[in-house]
Image (cartoon, rainbow, N blue to C red):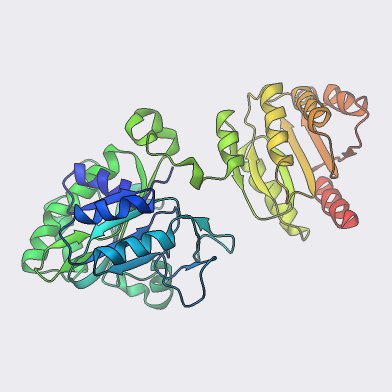
Length: 399
């Protein structure tokens, strides 16, 4: 689960991280009062969407010469003007895609005198199984670009979970960032603080870009992006309250109500599969035959008829779906349950696109019988390869 920048900073502040004072607003009428709460004379007006690249982004409704989603203001009137122009408009960045995201809230923040911009993030290093600090002196830039152009400027420091961030770890981080004197001392405190926040709140990503050295040589978290492990959210009701469903895909929200593993993609072939590995293989083979999957959807091993029906409805709700592939290998999951769910869903919402069904495993003959006797216009497949070829061909024929 992702949260907004102002929420991430509020969480980090509870652990003692150095963040600027700021106020979140939801309407332009709140801008003046927000500015009055901050000392000035410099304010920063930041669009709050779940996407990076806000500063370089462009608003759809404004001209190409308009400022981006992060703006400086040198007076209260300028804060108000920015708020009126930004709220309610659609910000397009390299992470949102061309459709962009509507800005429904802003963060008015006290300005800072920046001497240096650094990069600092925490994530799980899949190679070592440990939480790692990833740091670079090249802050304020896309870290992917830094990794491509100057990989030697990115440093990874693994943290032993038995000891947490030791003094030696903090020193290595400070040295990698070329920090000295006051800034070095600040990092000796900040590194264990960030690690504590990451582990105690079950974060999957904590990214600070940039982490700045100010003119007074102290460190400050200037921007923060935080994602949480969805499997651990039951332990953190306070974090659950921060969820902003307006930033999420409506189909993914609906899927979460039925405990379905669903991720919307950009293709045109909807997939309903049981098992994450089989779902990945199904997506791969669709691409192999020249098409693109519209989603990842794993109904799981113990899905009920109602759950399968919900899954099918979610797929058909995607206007980009031009064909559907149901690929079930029945182990724990029974093929007849899948078949009953598919039939119920089609009778409820109708079927406007080609449907290929491949069933194998437990109760497969009963499942095929249910499909065959349903009267549905379903294309049967013998195996995964056959199913992929048939759905790709059917979609191309229908175009």
